[in-house]
Image (cartoon, rainbow, N blue to C red; front, side, top):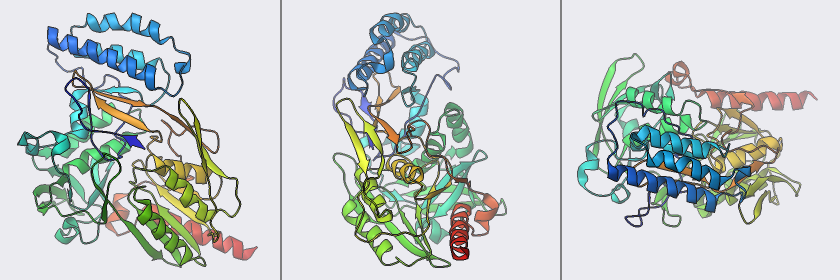
Length: 461
């Protein structure tokens, strides 16, 4: 539920074009206190222009016209002169941070240009192509999914038949270098900036995934540490992503896929990569449910799912409730409120349901998981989600920094906002390298054991 569009005109701030991936966060002025050069007159002018844009955008697009009780005009009168008189970029960022901090709300922040580059821009020599980032293709994938664990990029999943799988990459390996980039220092720099944000794991995963994307057929040099901590250097030729191409509005083409499998003993497993292409995803879920109505339980895997179309959460929830009148939560925008009402299906699945999440589960994934948890219909297993449930925008300001803001608020069925908090699992299970190296997915195994225990308890009654 993130809106990110392409560059429109020279004087309009540039918006990062990353399909529905919430690369948003609470940025202060961390990572900007290195040796700085004084601002030139032109740089200061762009900083003042950036301040005005931030102030006006919040005034016009915040979901609460009263801005949480903040005197926004007075804030501008107080803080704009600080930008006009600033000698260093860090002083400008501090003034903007102070402005947004007065809202007392998450997901309003300034992204220092160097961090914005780490997260959204081309990571290596491909940026020298001369083309705008929005125009350079990113279709090719290696099939590697990582999470930051103990400061390292841990491979948590390798997609079947992907270039990485064919090259022998295994879950539990660590990505050390990608091209000319030493991954560890980049992760450390971004982790410091996101230290207090629920978006930390999402952004850290994105930092690595962007560097493992390239046009189809391009070679990416990757150095790993294998299960014995031995260096393995591979040349991975990117391939077309799995699934079918889909588009939403003016966002880039995204490939959508689903996976259905059986987990012993007789547990249905369903996973999909985004809440998009409902004409494909929803029938796949329907088939997974209706073909396995007598299964012992079901696991829906939303780990790494960045969200998408909010309405799909309502349709999915309908497969697991017999009674009408339930709702996952409510979204509040400036002009109206939107209730996420559950729509029961003629046939529903009534056995135990587990939902897997992690720090890269965001947007509609959080709406679905949070609502199902609040309605006590599912057990949530994994790690706290990204806390990015809102329709949000990230833009590049005239001075080169990024600006993130939300324009709606969402409250889950239990009465708590998800933004900046995320969904807290009922059972916290983090990726563990020893288990992954042995071929065990800790969160999936925890879900399997819970479902077995639930059925055993029911049989004993």
